[in-house]
Image 1 (cartoon, rainbow, N blue to C red):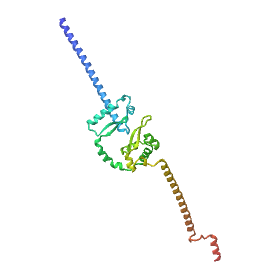
Image 2: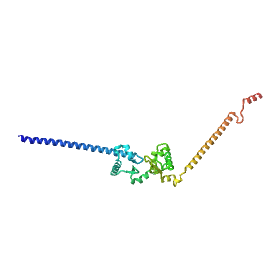
Image 3: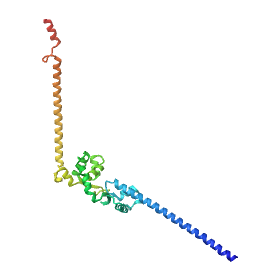
Image 4: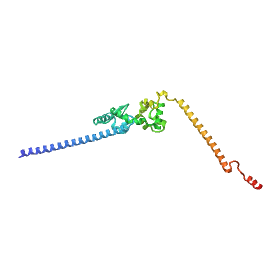
Length: 268
């Protein structure tokens, strides 16, 4: 009897031990699955954040700017995130891709759409340049290569959107990076700029002395015009007074004073 009960007790103990081990394994699997799902969610969030930064960037997205925007947890991950984004774009046959430019990354349309975009932007390129665009072009043409900060300081306003428009029109280009803190991009004019303004080279642009002389001549002409206008206004004022005076006489020749009227009455 004792020998029969002992195996049963041992069997029951082994079954309960087996059930506990299975429960622990299931818990570990569930926890691992939850961690993997959370990791995938964080990865997708990082991909979307990187894509948003690329869409909003007018300049190459650098590692420093990426970490500052996303956080230190993303340090050193920009290159692999970009590679993953490009793989997704290629898989879904998207019309754009991320390319490395200088020390960062920019979003570009694929080369096979170049002719389509040139036709689409042809009318836009022929439109007149705004005053802001002309001011920015003048700074880059006469002071270039210059940074965006240089253009902003001279114009006194933010020029980011203007420079992006000029880059789209290929009137300016990125020459490189300035050898100063932050390594900002340097902008210079292009051959398209020369064709747009009908000049053969930078040497055809007027020099500072020529501009100063012409500006002085324009100011002198403007002042002369003001003087002539003042003289003309004064002459018109005198003529107006004479007309008024003649109107008061009533006969178009001489004014009749009360004294003359009195003398005429005495003669009568």
